[in-house]
Image 1 (cartoon, rainbow, N blue to C red):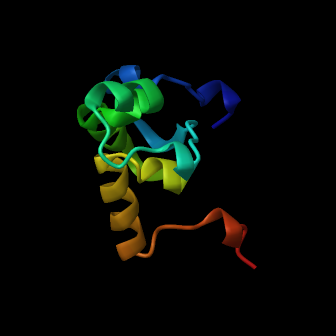
Image 2 (image 1 turned 90 degrees about the horizontal axis):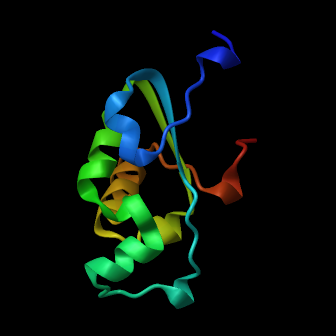
Length: 105
């Protein structure tokens, strides 16, 4: 495999792509002080974009054949329902690595 084999797609276009390895970059980062605990769908869409759409996230998560790596700000991800469920699942299964302990020593 080479860099020619790397494809970059938007979350909205993930349904069109299957790959052995998927790196899902959640580029949004919002300080806890700016997050709303009971935000409207419109506020979530404005501040979290496609990450606030459970269907789009589900499609992205199912595109990997062999490996999935999600990179993002966990505090921001946990501001959405799907993000809370994802981070909790990966913490419970021992697959969550916080930035302050990466790289492993």
